[in-house]
Image (tube, rainbow, N blue to C red; front, side, top):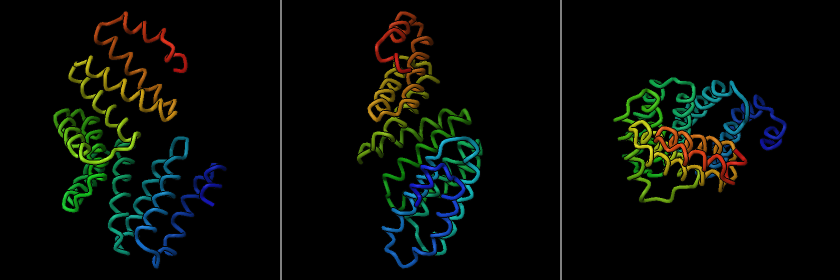
Length: 229
């Protein structure tokens, strides 16, 4: 049903469905419940269009409240990380940091490295948006340290590379920034994420322009890979 709602672009309906079926999971194993709810939640997040963040924030709070009542801590932490990212997208940076502060403290005690990487990456994005480069860089360094000990899915790796490129660009190290943006571009291109790859390609050009390498910039524009973008 959720897939049908998604195909028909019935955003409100899939939000209501996610809320409605939560009580049905009380007797199911926690791991199975977490997987189902995360799948539904990800379908909500994947809806195109603007003005989706506020309903998703309300849905996040609803699911978190249910998790607290039913002692579903693992699922709660996953949704809290999504909530922090939604706050970031809404430019509610203090709200995002408040959620992340409590979440990261709990995650470090539980040593959930995968979720630590995802949460610290959001933290790095928030501090970067606040123009607090030292804290953004510190959070990203922590991300990379933890990521070295686990398998990082390609999409998450591309996000890490993009954040690395942005920080390198802020430090005016445009050669390093270009290398990270290129890795981001290749990552998204391999996953056929055309829009995201195109955005990374723009940052590759930006690095060449700011690095005063106009010939390299023109070579990029005239290259075969630029045709799609």
